[in-house]
Length: 209
Image 1: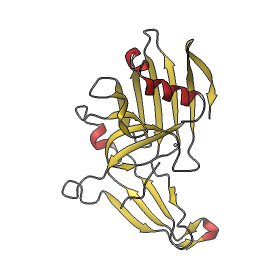
Image 2: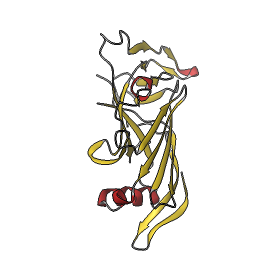
Image 3: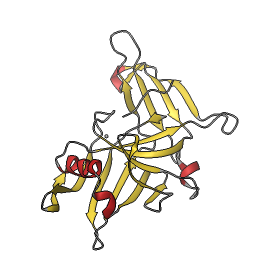
């Protein structure tokens, strides 16, 4: 599974029914992200996700997609198969809205992640995806050399552009892969007194082998 992460937004609201609505926006299209500075001897590596790269599975309602904590299928929050996740892919962003049911709010790891968001410790949005096989998509990615022009920000990096990706899950994560990526959240504090709103708050990627 491949993971990515870019700047985005996360918002949690309490509904009158007792359920919670968790909405997120993951803007990505055409924005290069530095995955590695190359260390002392290697070359920097950057990644770009092309517009609508996630559309294949997202545009098929019967394809199940999960909302997870930390890319762990043992810690689900919602899913399209369960009817609690609505997700869309546009030319510039992946957006989702999840329903966190009252039953799920009683689960310990769900309470933990809500409290972590409220404390400003877990503010990331990260998609988990795979590249499609070449028999289905002949060119799912493109590898290029950036060239060397430090005055214009080019440092001889290897640039990978993801043209098509099979999205399986979106996760709430703690540590962003991209230093510039932050999540702003209107979140909720989970305590013995229930779930209370807190102030507005100001996401991981692996180089594809």
